[in-house]
Length: 128
Image 1 (cartoon, one colour):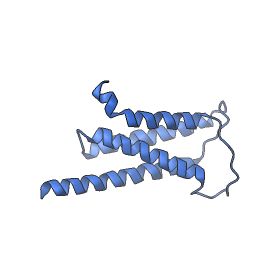
Image 2 (cartoon, helix red, strand yellow):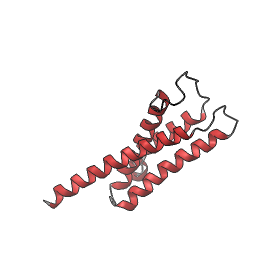
Image 3 (cartoon, helix red, strand yellow):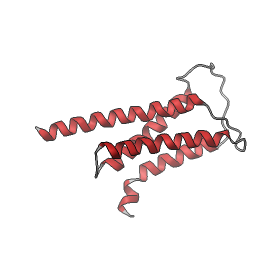
Image 4 (tube, one colour):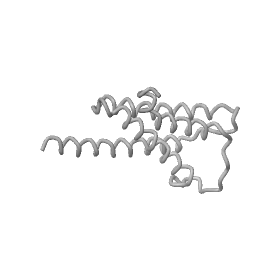
């Protein structure tokens, strides 16, 4: 298997999971309207956390600088926006929700923060 494909395999797996879960008809849960930390939102945060973290890990191996990390963060948020836009089409029986996008953003930013902390610690150890 090509090294580049193998390096991005976890990211591609997360991307496929997000796409499939975004495209299948949703199950309606009776949750409070403003329950941000409901099961659905935790799922969004978790998937986008894993997707963004896997992108950081893959992109950051060779070039662990700010541009690679921002590109990975942008790719994750862009895909989340695209999935929400796709759900506005009435062909899959789903609807877009700004709270889903907020949960996607939260998961991606948590991954960004964790990876930035990891890089700071790693660079500090190398400097010593």
